[in-house]
Length: 103
Image (tube, rainbow, N blue to C red; front, side, top):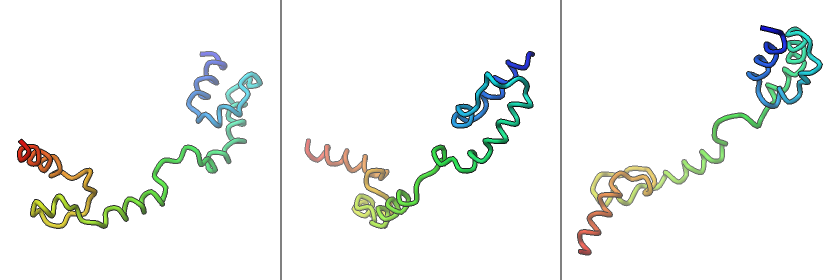
């Protein structure tokens, strides 16, 4: 395998923001690539764009929504269950009962 192919294969595995800053045409050997990567190593720790997870305020907002007990579960005498009514397991059963009463 020639060095250009090896350099391309290594560069493909790098994150996009790092590979965009490397000029592949100036690289002659893999050692040159490693030197360029080590110069850009500080970017890896400061990259905010690719962090995964939910922001703090989303979790706090969701938690405040779950503080109210589900009315569907209370009406079905299942006790106080703290979840939103949109995801209630008994919601579908209640909807079917309403349709049967109308008919």
